[in-house]
Amino acid sequence: MRTRPTGQVTSAVDTIESEGKERVSTAVSAKASVASPRAVERSFGALRQPRLATWIAWGIIGAIGTWADHIHQWAGVSAYPNTGWVGELLPASPIYVAAGVGYFALYVVVVGLRHGSDALLGGGHRDAAEVAYAVTALLAGYAVTALAGGAGRGEGWGPFLGAAILALWAAPSYWRLRKTRVPIYAGWVILLGCGFEWLATALGGFSYPVCPATACLGTTVPMLWLPLLYAHVALFFHRLAGGPHSMLV
Image (tube, rainbow, N blue to C red; front, side, top):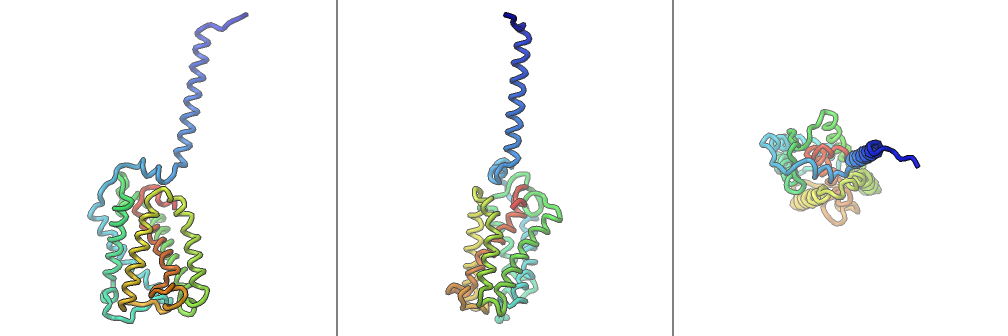
């Protein structure tokens, strides 16, 4: 029986081992490319503190948010008969400025910022198209509720349709984020936002003319869709303040 020289056998074994290691490395790389947001978040670095410029930027964004609320006013969803309400005294509402800074601070506490995620807004670097997408998505949420819950539509099926659209729209994002802290953050945003609006309307600061109605669920705010709108607000903050993966949701 003929046998191979020892050198040829050793060379063949080395070749097989090399090919095996290459396949394993390729498999690992492929798995990493489809890693979950939580895995990407863990690998992105340790937590860090935001810069002063970041806090100022979120305050400015909150001030601009004053004009997003006008979508609801123009549609008749909300009204401000109390001219002494703090949100009506200045062109930029202090309430919205506080909300911009406060929700960002809540994001820092609950979700956290990562080293390497050092753009102006606290997250990964965003180009103009990505910022436009985050802003447009939030404004679209306001538009849905304006069309569904505005004057003449808030007493019928409109609020139910609006709530369904917001829920179905947000569901895939929160499913992808289910193993991160973002859903916890969203829960706090919903609780604080709806709680503040309920208190403010109960005290006469502003009003939702549709209430009392079925959509208000016994409160002074349209509780049927308002929590879902705040869920989209939480996604807006995550898209801009989160790591490089956050624009995928």
